[in-house]
Length: 243
Image 1 (cartoon, rainbow, N blue to C red):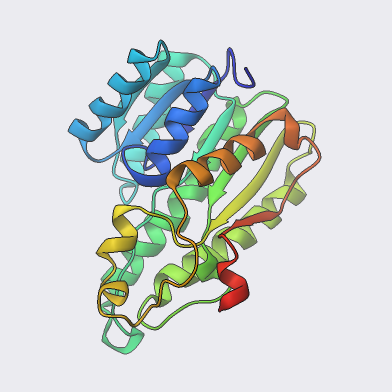
Image 2 (image 1 turned 90 degrees about the vertical axis):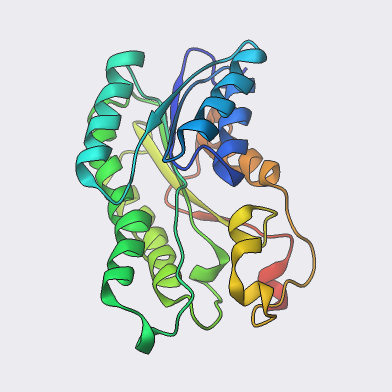
C-alpha cells in the first residue's frame, strides 16, 4: 500500500471530492485527518474508514478563520505526530456578476480557496519529511470559465500559480507540490450551482465521479509521481477541449 505508515490531512474532507480522497488514501494505508465544518458528516467519513479497518479522525475547521486553521493543524500533529500528505480541497463559490458582488463575499472566497491553502503550507511544511507531497484541488475554471463566478475562477488560477511558485522553493526530493483541475464532477457543489440549474453553464460530455479525482490525487501524492513537481493535472473527461 502506497501510504502505509503515512499521515494525510485533507481539507473539505466530509463530502464530494474531499470525502472520496479521504477514503482512497485510507484504503491505501494512510492515517487520515479529515477537516471540515460539518461534524456529523465528518463522523460518517471517519466511521466508514474505521469500518474498513483504516485510521482516521475528524477535526472541525472553518478555513475562513485563520485561528481555526492553526488550531486544527496543531491538533493533527499532536494526535498523529507527523504529516506526509496535504490535500487542499475545500472551496466555496459565489454566483453573482462582479459588479453586483459584495467585496465581503469576494474576500470569503479568496480566504477559503487561496489564503487558507497558503496558511496550510506554512503550518505543515516545517513538519513534512523528505518524500512528502502537497496536492491542491484547482478547477477547469482556472482555464475556461463562465459568467458569475469571477472570485472562484480567480482563486483557482491563483492556486495553480501558487503551486508553480512553491515548486521553485521546495526541493523535489523533500516535498513535491502539484494540483489537480477537475471538470464537471458529480458533487453537491456542481448541482447546487444556479448557473448549472438555469442552463447558463452547460454540462456537456462526461461527468466524473469524486473517486476519479481521488485517484488522481492519490497518484500525485504517491511515490509513483516522484518526478512530477509544480504542475497541474487536468482531470475533466475532455471538458476543456469542448469549451
